[in-house]
Length: 328
Image 1 (cartoon, helix red, strand yellow):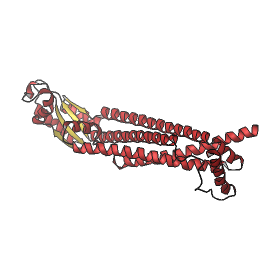
Image 2 (spheres, helix red, strand yellow; image 1 turned 90 degrees about the vertical axis):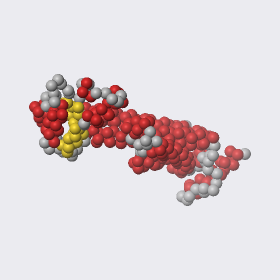
Image 3 (cartoon, helix red, strand yellow; image 1 turned 180 degrees about the horizontal axis):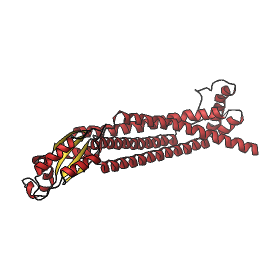
Image 4 (cartoon, helix red, strand yellow; image 1 turned 90 degrees about the horizontal axis):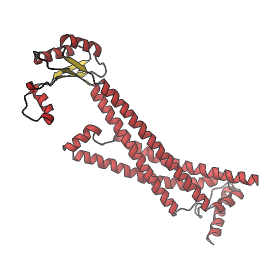
């Protein structure tokens, strides 16, 4: 008795639409409002949205961190002076500093003194070693104006003439590698995100087909008595839009909670060695306002994608019915 009653109520709902009016929402929907498949689809969409948001957050984090690295590296260059027998290292350092500050685009040149050099080497050599007994290069840190960097070719030539043992490293190789790594990571992340959205679309197609198969007799009768494809598609679109938004909102909230948890952990353990190492590599694990805006965008995209996919699937299904009927 359930199926005939559902069929009668579905036809009754469709009659106002056939006459140009509005369908009666209080009647039984032609799409089951709650079933196991719908609950499973909500869970699938929530999981895919969660993974998509995590992927987007990771890409945002890598991009921002790489940008910070690139900016920091581009602001500095290093003059390295190798020790040689008979070389007055302090005088050579002073000469290199003088040459560097004489170039336009160089904001300052700072000599790394003996104490700072020893502190840099202590993690590997321990405390109390004699710096003069080791062939350790000494450094001059050159601060560069990013808006107008100096002529590095001319600076290298001037250093080679004044201090033959000096080597200028503008970190250009590291910057190029960093940019290439960041671009590769972003490309991989976007590809993974696209695959996840494609998997979500396929899940919605199968769920829509399943829902239509379960109510195929009702849909065919409604369509045969004059219900337009857009009316039936609107019913499915409304149903799957609610499912998509529920699942996407749950997944987005879970991803935002993960991001907030990592940010809280990072700020809580700011002074620990583990946090220092993680911060040096990935920043402070905060994706910022743009990252959270991306999470909201993913939620909206998944919801709209769910509704649009179900709509197109229903229209295609009804088109196949019409084609079969014409051939028959």
